[in-house]
Length: 384
Image 1: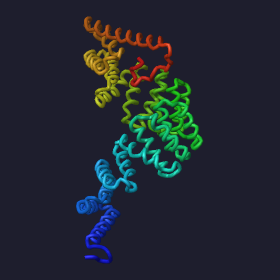
Image 2 (image 1 turned 30 degrees about the vertical axis):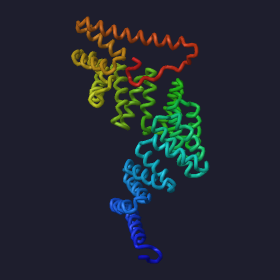
Image 3 (image 1 turned 120 degrees about the vertical axis):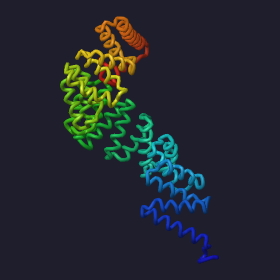
Image 4 (image 1 turned 90 degrees about the horizontal axis):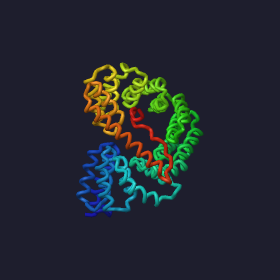
């Protein structure tokens, strides 16, 4: 039967579509998806139901399910507007950055350079590369995005972090100047340039910038830790300890701040104060070789030899390349009269030192070698 030029089948389909739209708008996603699912079965070559089921799943943050529906819709109707972008967004939000990039790149090439969609895609591509740890790949997209929106502090921050992590230090400093122009009191800007100067081995400049960051915003995450670390590397343990304490006041669960604070206290011969911090860290992060090493040092000082032995043995097991751990274990064995084991540990420490020395000589002997400077230790005991 034909009604007003439409078949009964088409009328029923249109009524179902309108019902599904209405349910979506009311946030009744389960009911809406049921209607769209029925339409997908009744009209299996129609991409629209799959596109809407994808949208419903994305609204509920079910990104893998959303991507699957979008792919079905694309297979049926590759040219349907917005499908590839929606698929890319679902993949991006679901952490599938590589696949998201594959969707976004052709979309960006097809967009006019000055369009709002092009700006959005540059940001998404930049952050997708960032999520993959491809920081150098993120930089050009974020630079273009920043040019398109020069007042956007968040884009500048993301750009500066990407530059820093890919060791493009002039780029960091350029972003810093732009951030300061937007906000002269930006603690984030001071902190970023401090990190860059630290990587460039300008310790004094880095310390100056991180002090400025602390003054500008003492609640900024990691700002006290960053300053404390720099002071720690310079042997200013008392002042470093104050910064680590300040970081822990902001974030009581900051494990690295607690670890460096304990180490600073050991350096100042405050063993009793260091012990409870280290015991807590060793329980929280049992795989931390440095926590066990420092505990071994504390227990050795307290003449708790059995406890010290347990901790130092564990430290050498977790970090077999740590010279200091083997050396301290060797000394402990010697104090316990265990000369054979002591000699074995001293030999290991000597071998590791010799290997390090030979490695340094090889680097220095290369004709085209460039002095990249010493990398900062990943833990408190790395430089002991």
